Length: 326
Image 1 (tube, rainbow, N blue to C red):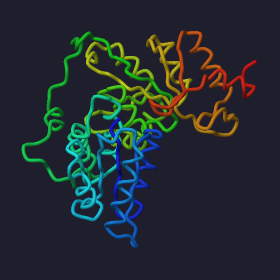
Image 2 (image 1 turned 120 degrees about the vertical axis):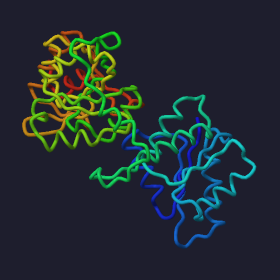
Image 3 (image 1 turned 90 degrees about the vertical axis):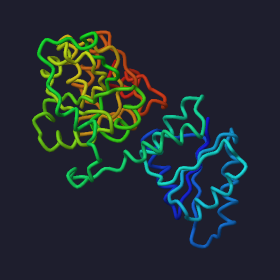
């Protein structure tokens, strides 16, 4: 696995390492090296050397640095001299770091190939809201061109005419950092669909979700009935969907309407009055328990992973442990 050094002025490297862990989970062979006001270039170089020595593979090392030309970059650059397999990328931001974590899961990737990938993703992560403030790219974007395309005629069969459910997740937070970056990349979806009657009729929440979609992936909010209709519409045969529910009751309605959900990832279910906290991120009430049991009887399986690399608990064992099942 490619080792990653996060290098910065001040504690920025430590902070972004912590942010990356919140989105992607704790990562091995990642070191934050920070330049303090009382340190000089030689002090920083020693910290870089110590960081690389801690990696399990010192042949493939990627330096993600805050600023081109500053001391962290200059010392990293000097340290790389003679190490042809190492690479440096400056302008460190969170999308860049998440892309690096994703790419290095493939053991065939090198520091050089990952550097090329994350350079593009780091630039995509810089966006402006309102969007009309963002400078227009000469020649227009592919998204702009796609928006002018004619709608697909009703009845047209796209691909095999069947929407693919790439991943189904219950998460009361719906579309947030872990989903927009980690899960979306891991499952290879081209569309994120939030299925909720409540959210579909809340213009503010709906707009926030659409705006939170990661680059290259569209986000939609639908009612339960609309989602079932779209699933059965042959025009959506090219859709690889990451489907998000707020609660298991909504997921159950979709299954009972005939959508063949085979597996559900339970991410986060927020605590509220009348609910029992069964682990750090999942709180359930009696209606939730009944929905889980009915889904289980319908053949649905579950996991409780927060991120793809994390471990999973048995939801029914958690319910039993907390005296919610006999």
